[in-house]
Structure formats: structure tokens, C-alpha cells
Image 1 (spheres, rainbow, N blue to C red):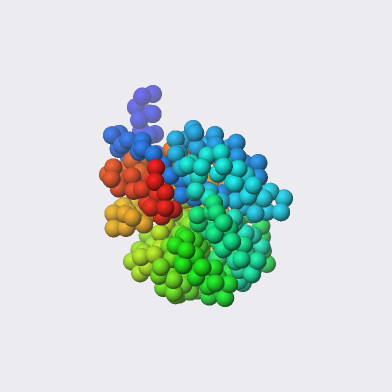
Image 2 (cartoon, rainbow, N blue to C red):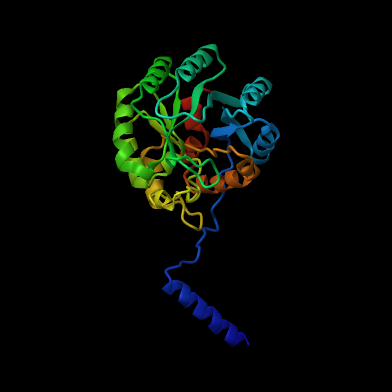
Length: 319
């Protein structure tokens, strides 16, 4: 029986090897990063405050860059402002995220955003969906994407105002149509060299694409939200296939090409979760633990930069 079991296991291993599968190899000495964390990107709708605070406490996240999702039925702006009043040192808050915007930013949004920054307590502009493919779990649009022109008149007006005020802007675009969009964003980043652009999730880009952006434009920084796993949530399989993969392999080991990027651009990456819907807030502690394992594969000085130091600098706060 023992010999038979051994032979079966040997055959299974051989079949897996022939299929191109490799068993996970984990470093037994690998330790989780145990230091402070600054979640550089999160968002809420109304009613999510309890989940947010529970997640932060359970995960030992000491600070968060937070903004509201402005839906008609679940507008989270009042919740974000209330959290800032209750925990002024714990939260850096941004101008709320707008939905149902197409082609160019509305006049009303530009005026409201500038007024909100000038009045406070907002310290950055929350995620602007410049190029955002439909997701399988979200709204489906006729065009298959939300798209705001990078050379829109009101986009330029907002960015000029934020550049003058030294306020970071989260400009979201995904790389499912790189040949169409990269020339536009290349020009946009160059047009406002004094503005810090925060690129959420690195646009789900490959390491090669990220290197192209960072090597060309020193005013672009990246949140690592959702780069802990492959993104296949797009409603279009064709678009999903054009995205880059995770920063880790299937065993959770940091890929060498991403390790090189972290080394070469140590001041340009920020740990983040982009927790935003109830489903992701429920997994918050799990996501943070995964990032602690990833950060634990880096030397301590580099891990600290990605974990909290870069976010403190970008958002202009100190622990």
C-alpha cells in the first residue's frame, strides 16, 4: 500500500511537471513586515464606517488616505468628514469621487473641487476615472468603459489649479488600450510637471509598462492596490488579457522584475488596498496580511518606504 501510494504521488508530480506547473517554494525564514502601515488609497460609501475602523484596527493600519464615493443613494462624503473629525491624525481625506462623468469634467465639479481644497480639510483629489473598463461586478456601459479625455478643457483647468496649490491628484487609467492612452497620458504628465499624479493600481500594468511611465515622468507615483493578485474582473475578456499581472507569483513570492522596480524607484510606490465596496472591506485584514508578507521580502529600509514613508511625503503628513 505504501509503495502504491508513493507511485501514485510520483506519477501526479510528473504529470504536473509536464503540464508546466511548479510547486510552491516558500522561504521558511520569510517574515511579515511588522511595522506601521499607511493605506494610501481607500474609499467608502455611506454605512461603511464600522467595517473600515474594524479593518484598520485588526490589521494595525495606522493611517489612511480616504475619499468618498458619491452615489445618489450611498453618498459617503458625510461619513468621511465625520471620520476626519473623530480621528484627525488617522485620516488624510480627498475630494470625493464622481461617477457618471464622460468626455470632460463638469464645470460644477472643477469649481467644487477647488473650493473644497481651499476650504479644507481635503488634502488631495480623489480618484478621477479617466479610463476605466467596465467590471463584471459593476455597471455595464454602452461603450464598455468610462472615459474622460486627458486633454479636456476642464481636466486641464482642474490640474492647473491643483499644481498651483501643490495638491496630489489620483488620475485613474487602465492599460487595456495602451496604444490609445499612453500617448495622451505621456503628454498630460509632461504638461503639468509640478503636479504629483497618483496612478491607482499602476493601471493594472506590466512591469515593463510601469517602467516606461516612471522612467519618463518623475511626477508620477503609484499605489500598489490590487496588484497583489491578477486582475480578471473586467467584463471583457479581451481587455482583461491586455492587463499586466500581479507583483507576485502564485506562491506569493515577489517577482524579480517588480523587485527591481521597487529598488530603482524606491520613492515612487505606496502600499494601498483600494478597499471600496462591502466585499473588499470584509477581506481587508486578509489583503493587508498579504501585503505584509510581500513587504517582508524587502530590506527593512525599502519596506518602510513603501509601507508608510512615501505616503507620508506625498500627502504631506508626519506620523
